[in-house]
Length: 473
Ligand code: CTP
Image (tube, rainbow, N blue to C red; front, side, top):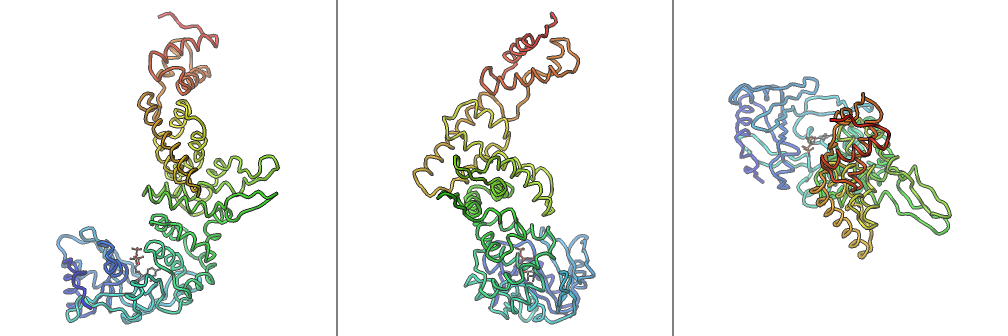
């Protein structure tokens, strides 16, 4: 089959001419071919394999492109990279690889295209388009990856045990592709992943997290997490989530399985937001439930302060997985910490002051918090579901209303500390903090509006109440 349309971009002609000049064969391989055949839009990464030196080919291509080209070389791997019009081109010489058991570093020897295809992860990623003049656009598909694309199957070119132990990151990749593309991992592959799961330990945390990000960014992330569980990888990567699994029963009382509940929440939120960190928050919102789970006769099952415990666990989890401990982490912590606030609120009559407090504490993230809480509704009782959603809608409406009136979101004290000092002729002292806090509380409680005149008046009365005397002005 000819696939010229995949190779319409002029860069492919340039590569073809360069390969011809060097008298080497060149092919596009991997993700670009897969995504073209899946019609997944224009891929921005193009992998070129040539039977010969990838570095020499990259240099030749760079020389033919207009302007000065920066080519990056990775001599140890025999690869070269260059950027052109927003496309990242990677060149590699075809190779036979075998791997050291304790690292992902391959021992590389030159090889044929077929050797190279053999050593790739999945049949759907081993397909190549020829860039050679006599067969330009021809699909070279020795493992029938096309069939696997049609059947939506993840399969390894070689026996799965070899492919996964060559590079255990592929266990994560298999699960990620299955989730992203909604494919099924073929039975022997799934078994091999299960058998080799312990080898994930040689993979860097950063790479594992990259794959988790991609799972979370998928349409239905639960598929990936269910596969992590099924293959035994879950406790090695996310022991906190694994600990949420199961239902205990005492005196006939049970609680829900918080692992499967969490996955439903993640799928729900995936339908309403692309914010990756909000999806992380959904994944981690209940992790505090395992360590806080208690049973007593009076209250049944409780998870007292699980939100607080959970938010502390977020830090440890991010740290262990070498994720950045930055504002994204703080956002996830905040979401976990506040994850029950709107719920408590909506169970009752929604008062303005409760809404003001919620907005004050959540700040600009109050909508994200509402999105998380709405996703958290996993009841199978349609009547309850409708009621909860209606209540949250009411909370959202009140948030807008209260915000328009009271501007709480990025709360700035309407009377400054300096003005308090001047009014009562104070040096920096505890009293200033007390008065400021009282003003804030009065605004949140709705005793006074969030306005300068009212706040100033309140400040005077409050100062006198704690024994201060205003200086005459
Ligand atoms: N590959 C592999 N084993 C890996 C990683 C990559 O065999 N552990 C091969 C596959 O043939 C893959 C190609 O290298 O298609 C390029 O890898 P990469 O750019 O990481 O992934 P893509 O397949 O392009 O997919 P995506 O861009 O979605 O990650």
